[in-house]
Image 1 (cartoon, rainbow, N blue to C red):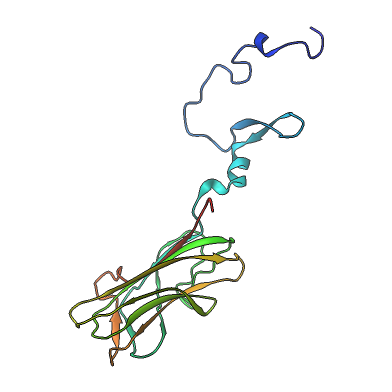
Image 2: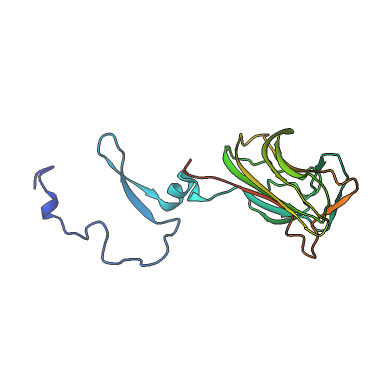
Length: 201
């Protein structure tokens, strides 16, 4: 036949796909055909390149940190919560030993969540998230009425982080008149700090 005279109707349906369906998980080396969106030219690309382009659809960087033991918080002062035990740290962006902060290496919007618990008799038991040292996010306050209440203080917020040097930390304040210990359990999971990058926003 002459050039450009063979139509789609004359082609077998398996001309490109072949006889075999791989029937399994897509591998990085698998190839896809795509239209270049301009001149209608078909191109091929590997699954590994598509995965990189869309960021694999993962909510990372992500972290979850907790206390490895109880932390004493003095009355009437703002104290950084030293969450020194990592449960999750997908990209090594959380510092569990020096600054106790999350400094993600990718720009985006992040959901940051905190929770604290401690036996306390006070009028204020407050937790908040600081971005770059500024107290402007996720103030969560509870008003305990007895030392036996073991109140929880929970908060969350969505924060823009630049992926370069922005960081977030967790702080606590209480005014019981004496020191209070956070994380009053054997596992200390009830005092935690966590977050992850949001996708699709």
